[in-house]
Image (cartoon, rainbow, N blue to C red):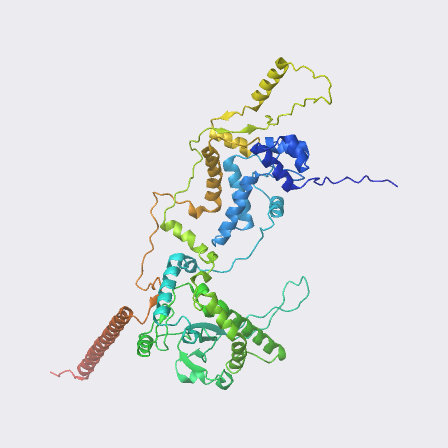
Length: 578
């Protein structure tokens, strides 16, 4: 039987932290290479190779990475940044843009057609375990743009002023929040236990897609009002099909032609500003403050911690109901019962209070909004604020001192025998030592490279490593070259020229307000009165035009009838006989 010789794995016989400390001691001049190796228990050749630049500090066993480590780190940081800003890259985009970067910087790599493949991606994930593939959540462009720091800070400033003036900072029962959500009879099936590897797992739902709008109102103490349900219909008969007795106690029902909120019910999606609601609030000494538009995913308590659990509970209730009997279906008669179950399960005291706390309303805390909430708004701000970014690598750089791979900076210590006892001391010939010192000094002279492009190519090819420099601007500029190229490919929206004018957003007549508003202020009331007057004039003019059109139609009919009568009379006349 043949015996196969087992290869011994070459494990590191030293600690990487000890190696870093040894290199730091040598570069700072505290120790020589030999003393540092002995002190930190690291092989002398290992310390010497890292100090001179023959080997990189972070390269372990196996083949050397295709890209320089610093460049790879810059790519990884840019990819992470892009995902935080809402413009993340897919795996294919990452590989394609990395290939474009390799071609642009003229880096010699083993990549086929200069584009990395799946193997490089797997190795990259091993070197950077914090990288993974995630499915991003849907976030509209308006939500990304409107959720910016300036608007949120202005909102919290006015909110804090109102809470202070009205003495509401310690009165959570008097701080209320209202919002609406929509539910359909066709729910989203919950996850079920199924066979592993099955291509399709069916989930039964109702074929009716009737929409119902649900209006909820809660306070910072965790209390809730009875809900308002708005169904689709033109008359009150549209509510008769619902089993209203099974809805939560005190539920109010209303109808609307489309099933959505409108001015007649008290709201409008564009601004939630109804004149009747504002006037009633002023009458009852209620301050109504609207949230900044398209920011409810962070500033609306109901959206943060209530409506999410409510949707899950509704889907769960519908799934359980349909599983009980094959004849069951979600319709007008069964919907109130399912809604009642989800309402009681989700709108709990703890969920409601968590929403106010997460939005910084009660307790009042503007810092409750996380910093990551403002990041998606930055790409749109680049077009408004023209930030100049270095694009060209043809920049004038000062000369940088660097140590080449073939140049050794290690000075071998000259050991002299110290006599023991009273032994004779040997005479030292200085003429033999001086040439040796001169040779060592010549070998330590570091080459001056005046061509920055040539210097960049040497660094990219790992043929040279910057150890020390008398002029730090040169090293910083070379780093800027890398960062500029990486930024232009992986974060292109930030690469805006100073000469380029920011894009202007055309304002439309129906555009909503771009910030929060105090709806019970005199300014808003006058604005609403003016809009109501204009709307009334428009309706009157439209009615007047209809009346004029009807009059014209009547005149046309009269003319047609008159002509037809004349024709009949002319036909009835008999010709005269001669």
